[in-house]
Image 1 (cartoon, rainbow, N blue to C red):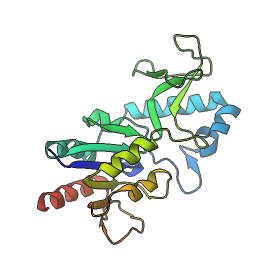
Image 2: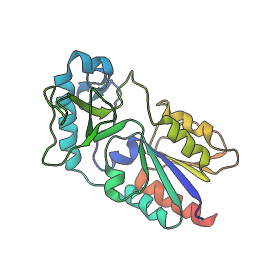
Image 3: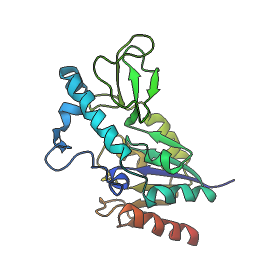
Length: 229
């Protein structure tokens, strides 16, 4: 049986593909105030703006490709049972070929019914755009399949379960300040090797092996370290 390698990824891994990070220093995302386009209150106030914003993000997503870090994680599946927990809403892990991906904050290329959250629909490249008037096949309005600020993170329990089952745990491209994702480290079993890849890593316990590099370089260093185990 292959060791279970659980990897938690953040904005840093997608930034190298050309996707803007979620929030910059002055609280903007692609020049929009974050709480206007990524909060439950913002969606209630101005659903047209939120739909417009995510339409733009989907068009941007079609213009980029998975990078070497995404592809290297797929390559690790030759030797490990790889499970990816991502804070990112893009589909670059899937497009690279990763078999097991859990999205904590939703998925950009999906929408869901506002009448039944279990009715989730995948958009296609030739059918990207939605608006407050967009209806599903039952005649109900849809919204972006995104976990807005002020909403619960429905997949966190599954993520905790994966973290607890890990034989090796890796964090890539995140500041470790976004909760609840930052809590996952606390659920890794004692003695399990933990690696942290980031060009500006946060302070972590001394038991964590820090690889201070961007994702494309850091994942290759990780592979070297795992080979030596």
